[in-house]
Image (cartoon, rainbow, N blue to C red; front, side):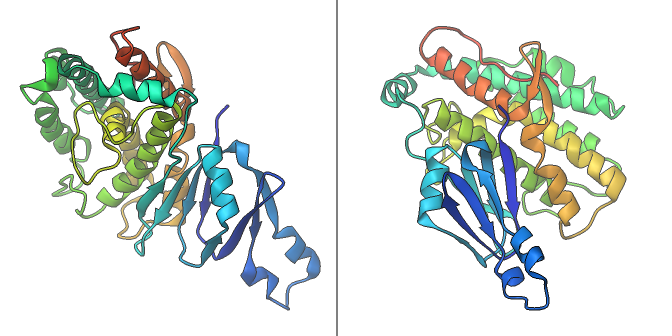
Length: 309
């Protein structure tokens, strides 16, 4: 079942009651000019079991410890935004699978040749999806085709970086001087926000599969708690790029993200993707990707399942 993504941007009080996330709006309750019926309708409840991601985007939001415990028991990814209203931190449960220890062992004992082969598959599918993203916008993609077909084990020729240079020069070529950079001007902020939602979705699936999100197959960073999520989300990034390209075409570019921009990007976990010949919501696809990686670590199969754009 596809889980819901909830966004909270106004001052509110969030608690748990009878396994329901309960939302109270203090500003509404304290407004004596509003009728009692309106105040009553301002209260809302949502079953915790239906939630996949919660985004907290206001410093005046209060969450009870009981609610946080319930969210973690149900493997809900909780994203906290900073003063710029950009995702800053991610909260996930320590335990997400009943045979977690067994899967940790398989992950930790994975050989270097296996991890290099898995990274080869990851880079190849990412470049292939980048080519499809360009073609969907009637942009030239011929340069990327031989690259994705010739990625070597461990991507020793750095095809990923070579493809990235061409890809970013092409997909936003209508934006004068665009360079993909995390701290760069818009629409980099749109991409950052979308990738943060994607990363949380993938990290949630990794934990549910009983894997360590910190231990990547390629990414290694002593300060990064989600190296494996950064690995597995790579072939999914072009889906975000497509959405941002469409947003820019229809809504233009603004320095600050509007509620309309965020509303579109928060739907990323629910967009349809094709994986293993079947259509499914992206959130379900990330779960299949994570489970397929478990099977690779266990020697049950040799290929990670990734979506094909």
